[in-house]
Each structure stands twice: as structure tokens, then as C-alpha cells.
Length: 193
Image 1 (cartoon, one colour):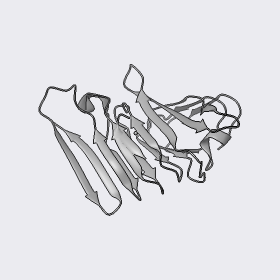
Image 2 (cartoon, helix red, strand yellow):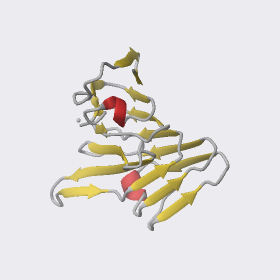
Image 3 (cartoon, helix red, strand yellow):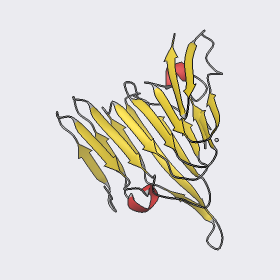
């Protein structure tokens, strides 16, 4: 869907599938969006796949202090004659078991500082040399320095030309196992103890 105003979507007790952005997230979402998933299985798709910007975009995921609410911000650097940074309003989501970002066709930065507990995240990148960092650069960054404590579900990465996949677990002193598999254009990251 598209919106100019702040919106709260409350899924209640049913199974829900939310698809927001309509192919151009920054153009079509101009108000804050809050998604309350409910007690059944809920899916969120963030759709930015129809855009081919001149510069790559920055997609950022994080979670609130309660560890159950996720947040998403999308930014695009604008070139002259009107330079600047275009930033989307905040998207927040809770009780969503599956979230997916369909990124655009440029070389983008995917940053995953944290995900909500119980939410699996899928990142899809098309075209460009995508770099995935589970934290900062089509870079994917995941983990925010402590992957095991910050990532609340599985993270799966798809890209046509993955430049980098960085799992940032530098601040975690425990001995963890990260299951990373690549096959074709798929990269999957699972956490474990």
C-alpha cells in the first residue's frame, strides 16, 4: 500500500500479510507506519524493487529496547542540483514472524543492527554489486557487534552479485557457531550456540 499519513495496522488474531511500498518505498510511504501483527503468523514485505536510483540506498533494520518491536528506515542520497538525503518515516512492526525487504536495482547498503525476537528476516538485492553486512555497507551488515544477542531469528540474503557478507559478532566473547551457506545467489545465515 501507499500512504501520506501516519498509519497503524492492527492485524488482530488472524494471519496477515502486509505489503508496503508498492515498488518505490521512498515515494509511496510518506507517513510513519506501525504494524501490530497479532497472535497468528504474520508476514511483512517491504517493496522497493521497481526503482533504479543513480546512487545506492541505505536500508536499516533495528529493534526497540523491549526486543519484540522491529524498526526500518530507508535513505537515499540525492545528487545535485538538489543534493541531500531523503529519509523515509519510521516503520515499526511487532508480532511479525517473517519480514522481507525487496531492495532496488542499485548497489545498496543493507544494515541489520538487530531483529525482533521471533522474526525471520529475508533481504533481497537485485543488480549492482550487493554487499551484505549483518551491521554497515549492496553491503549487508548483520549483528551490531553481538550477533547472537541482537538477531532474534534467521537472516537469509539473496543477491545477484553479493560483494560482501559480514557477520559482526566482535563484542560477543562466547563461543558461537554461525552456519553460513552459499549456493547460487542465496546466502543463509543461522545463529547457534
